[in-house]
Length: 85
Image 1 (cartoon, rainbow, N blue to C red):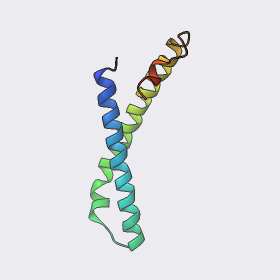
Image 2: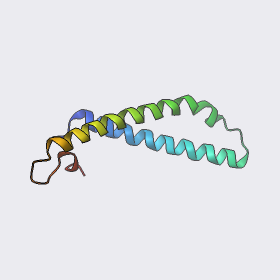
Image 3: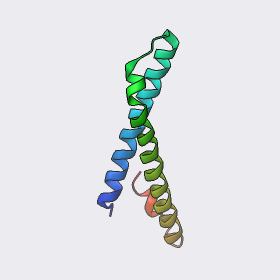
């Protein structure tokens, strides 16, 4: 059974990844056009916080997946962390 933390971690991970992707595209577009965009300047601390959150949740999820992989190794070839996909 998928815990509430797994659901929240996945949602936060994908949302922050999406936000970081948009930020990178905006900053590349602004640099390319030579525009000193206020969006790039104002959102820099938010993006650093987003990188930290994404890395933190990613490490927690990786740790959970690796534990699930080791626990269910003797089952019928079915791994707990693969059931979600």
